[in-house]
Length: 242
Image 1 (tube, rainbow, N blue to C red):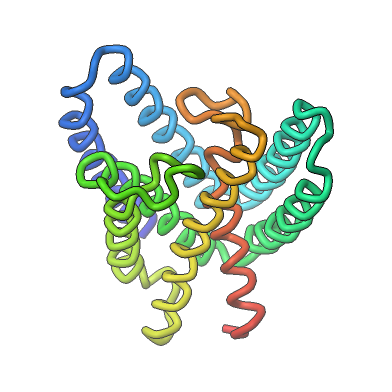
Image 2: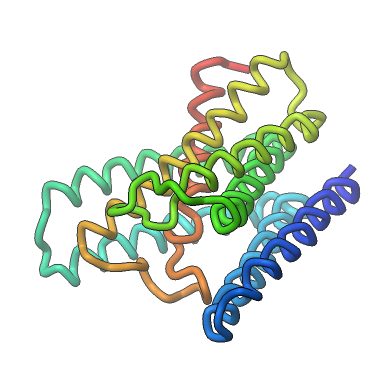
């Protein structure tokens, strides 16, 4: 099954690469190079997380811990750069982040098939939101918070992720409405997590949390969807008990 899933992911990356080819050929060389750097880095990150889940879930749990800790450091770093202003806002944001980070940690310790299912849905939503947004995204959702977030991109990514979720439902076998609820929640929380992370850094007037990941920025720039989406799965199973 894992080989089939990997081929499925690889097929999406090939499709994504074609999309990036058509997008980048209209850009200047510097912009195209930056776009390809982002794509290749994303390819490597997805493989690292995928194999950490499928080969040794303990490795994924270590990566989750690193993501949560580094993300917290990035948040505090922006607060420090702003001379420790907006303390009330930062305290509330850190509280929410701690809750989501705890949810992600509990999620990482759940059934490996469920973790893999969630990771795949999140990855597909994230990847195809970017591709759909660059191809068809015209109407911006929140231009002052997340300038690159468009209706076309979010809808396109959501459709791909939801359809893929049902294709991958052998990883999470349950009633169709529970699969739909889980998957839609993953997509919604991933979207809201991205918006929330963008809102936080905009409060401090920066584009990226850091420059730790080539083409992406910081850990929170890259993993905000994973943190929020994983936390949703933990909440879903806590509430529904399924």
